Image (cartoon, rainbow, N blue to C red; front, side, top):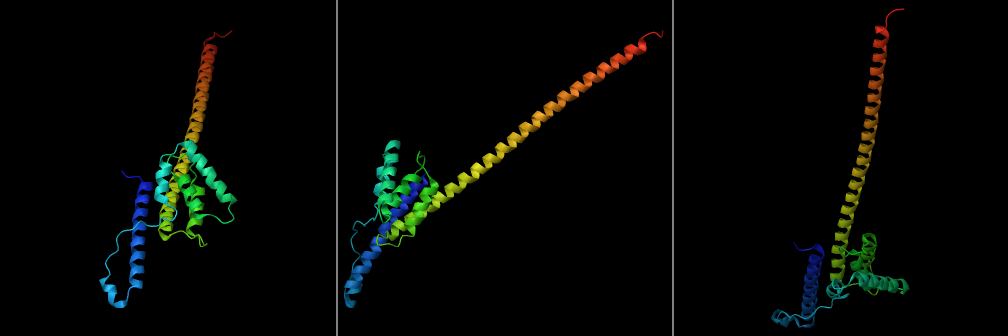
Length: 203
């Protein structure tokens, strides 16, 4: 079964390629005279400008150790804190690190906030459309995972509370049984004393 983050990377590759072909074809047709536009052949594939180079970044972090990922996240956060204008590529790279599955530094909320800022970026460093589409997919994935975790945690707490209530009921039931046993013993003792008194000869 293909993991969802890998699917996101594959989708991103398709988006980048599609956007590149679209832009190249549009540029060629615009520069040609009207009579020659129909004769324009499909341009050969050229490597796309990947903006924040997300695919390459995924390849890099997949080979990092836990300590290296942690150090990379600290460095990216430091660069973001020190920059006067938020660097969009730093944002999405940190978001990828914080959303990586099974990562010890995983932080869904921080990742979602970074991706949201990245998607809404309208500065001079506006990300490529393909990068924004990828960020949108990743944000949706992290939000769904966060919701599932919340529901799981909520269900777990409910079950824990029910277990505590069940244990309390069991303890109360055990106490009640003990009290009933004591009452039976007392009743038996009283009956025994009554029989002994009734069997004594009259003086």
